[in-house]
Image 1: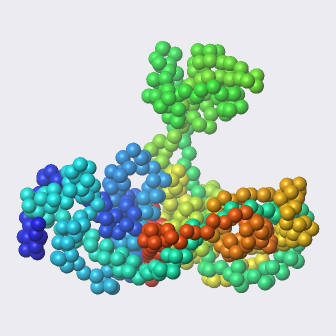
Image 2: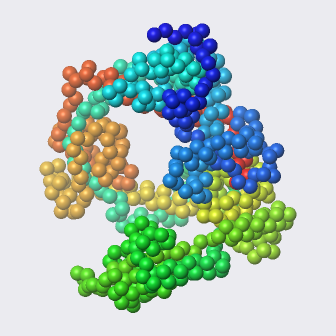
Length: 616
């Protein structure tokens, strides 16, 4: 079948009503990036809240290109819809929104990086390449479409007939999809082309995977050291600090926030409304409605789908108000609403019995009505947050908190590559804001996944510096303690080897309650049970004669000696059979590693400014 440039250029306009396109159009929209670039995750933005007054502001900057509010907002609306379509059963709560925003920003950065690289590498797509792709390598979503299958397999002739012969208008649509994705595929091909796997690497990997040993270890666990022996003195800690401060305690630029948390709590009217709903459930239950069906209809607890069934439980298995009520009730009785920290419960007791320990157990179901903040309560909280923010911008966070009776807290130091801020959780946008602004600057209020608000102010900024001893004292103590524990473990291992002959090692180890572990089918890149992975030590083990012991070897948390019980060397006759499969695996591994390194370099050059904290 012939495909030519003339036909490619002269195909008609896309007809949305066509059956084949109706089947594929939606799917192709959502996976074109995944088709073009396997590294790009599904892009999902959400429509940004509370941004109406900031239409002239910039959400961020990548390679000097400003991301306007309008650009971000239009994209976010589309991608928010994508997320809903991809996750139809998932509630879009604050946690989901935070996840969507973070994924969205990362993918926006990635697309900008890729577009710049395509331009920089002068990557072009020719008509001939599009024709070749259409003819011989259509996207995966086309190959997987039932309409193009015969006996469950992709039928190339059926596909080409549908796309070109019978309905040439389909070419217009397919050309658009492929022409959009090919530059990204070619970029990835260019990056991957820089990776080479040599024959020696393939052979080395084959040997590593097929050189097997059975190994037993005796472990001298440093945790067994006497506490007084390994507790560091102040002098030891200060000596360690002075020796290591330049290497271990130099910090990059760091920041702190002062912040106020305005918590979302149900109001008195919210509680009253929940209690009224619980009373309504109680009234319906005592009038004879099926309790299980009522629970399915009304309960807000995890047992609702099971009709509120909690099974049998002892008194100490439930919170006290619930247990007190349930165990005071008679079989068949229904309680009036019982308040616990979870909300209001209407309880029905179905049975009582003694368990095998002689304890009384109750079989009960419940209808849980949670006390939740109403939309009105949430709106009032937002007003409070905005009022406090306005006051803090005017007078500073400390004065505003004093006037409005809020507690001010301060975070620990955080670095530019931090994801989490102590007391505030995962806040990458706030981290970016802190390093792009001066002390005293305030980001917009941040709404948490629980509905609380953080109002914050940069309170501390410092460039690269050596942390003071008092700041890192606990870390120094841990480091010195670990060194002393390892020294104790090494001494114990050396004493064990000196005092005993190899033929007595296992017997003495059992008698002295040392840890003995067996590792069958152990590989040179493997991890020893209870010890961990150290390829240098593994090499020593494999170089040891069968039935012989190694010298004491240093593990992460203690020393050990290893006995090479047996060894099965690789069958090199099988190498030719497996080498291409191994080459493919190694190539994929090296390509992924090379891509990550390339991407990190591009990202560092992007000089990314993230202003999301001003908007969310």
